[in-house]
Length: 215
Image (cartoon, rainbow, N blue to C red; front, top):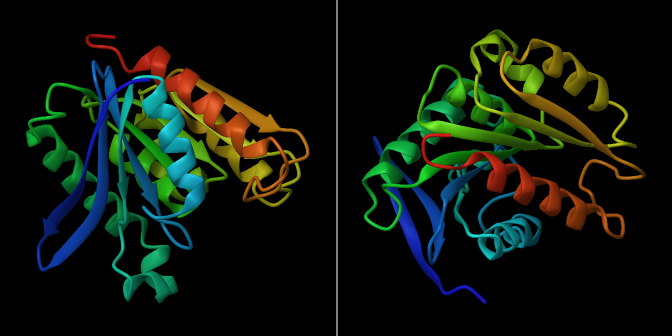
């Protein structure tokens, strides 16, 4: 069992303070920032489960709320990919200065509209070593996908019928190393038995493979 250093994170972006949970295992090889648009955040059991699996594999995590509690009820802000991306980049700048994580390779794990924010933030950004999207809307960052060179894994539930074609469209636009995996029988939230475990396994393998210094 790896020793994990955990603490709350407070990231000021203008007049807004973003809340997060930072966990860095000993001898970490990278750190993954979780990006969410709505209905999910740093306290979500789904996100915390995936983060725990990543830490067990030696990957640090920053579970992050890109919107305040009040903003998360505003559908305009939930779909404001530029706003979400800017805040994710601010969190990236913060973690690059964090003593426990500043020398680690950055990864992004995005869900829903947070996946689009992660890909927009990764576009043309050499600091980002890998991206994983879970049930995401990467199509909302379509104009930026040709500039994403970080290895990108798109994970979609096989029964998430409205989102599957949007991920296929985004997959074709991505320029860098990429993979599209559909989890059989899973719906949008991966609530079916074994579905979230498969998401965590796929993400952990992807980040373990790609978040390496000078990779």
